[in-house]
Amino acid sequence: MTEHTETDPFPVQGMDAVVFAVGNAKQAAHYYSTAFGMTLVAYQGPENGSRETASYVLESGRARFVFTSVITPVGERGKELARHVAEHGDGVIDLAIEVPDARAAYAHAVARGARGITEPHEVSDDDGTVVLATLATYGETRHTLVERSGYKGVYLPGYAPARPIVEPVEGRRRVFQAVDHCVGNVELGRMNEWVDFYRRVMGFTNMKEFVGDDIATEYSALMSKVVADGTRKVKFPINEPAPGRKKSQIDEYLEFYGGPGVQHIALNTGDIVHTVRTMRAAGVEFLDVPDSYYDTLGEWVGETRVPVDTLRELKILADRDEDGYLLQIFTKPVQDRPTVFFEMIERHGSLGFGKGNFKALFEAIEREQARRGNL
Image 1 (cartoon, one colour):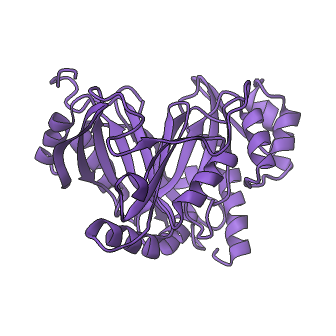
Image 2 (image 1 turned 60 degrees about the vertical axis):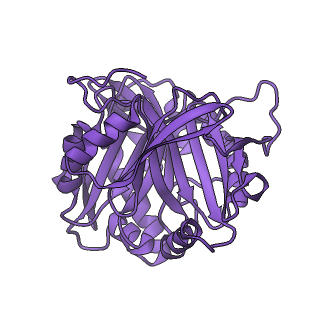
């Protein structure tokens, strides 16, 4: 445990886990094993004491996803999870953050106006002790604060090691290795409120802003601000819709998710070409980009690790800022509701979020909205 200092009253060590509530956790675990190349490492269910829910823990590098579904909704936890999935569909319920001192972090946040859901408490097994506490944020999303320095188990007490769904093959490369950022969608007029929440409660700083014409097309627009901790290990862009001629992607999300929530998760990769080829071969669908996007790409992005012809072939976007460049691509929604999707991102110095691609990206999203009849 590290000291809780005045200079950083809410230190974080990174994202601990992205926790999903889903209709069928076993099938979700299979999908993310085969399509995203993740490895099943832990399980909790009836076989080891969890009678109401089943949870599967998957990892890829430092990224950890947890998928939970209801077995028998007879108690409070099962009923609440069943209600959540019925109302929102599959989605993220918890952006868990690893902290060096969960008690101090929770006390600091609550003292500054955060709503506590679960007070700090210890959970133990033969592998040690974890301290957990939970805070509320936008919609029904929460942040569990995880202090795991005294624990050597596979995930949390109550979880048992599990065999991978896809057997490991020597030499197989990871598809991605870390969570880059997690994007939240909130209602019109609420973005600044939640930006202030992260600044006031967690001491996060405003890293980027995209307003006005930054994220606008002929039909729709949105506004976005990015908050991050001082080390930039945890980054949370917050989006809200902006007035437009037609329904924006944020409006569509809010309608189909039934309120604010996590829109997409960006995942770091060291080789986006390998990532896209592998995921496409496994059936993942990505947003399409017109060939015209690539006609002048080299003129303003300059030279990148991946030739423009390969970017064009795979529909990968590129952007450059004062710090370097990045390569990125976005999946289509990964469930039937047009809600949660993923971004794969390869960074070369750039700390940005692909501002130069916003118009092309949002036009691609609008084409998908039109196909769904939701534009």
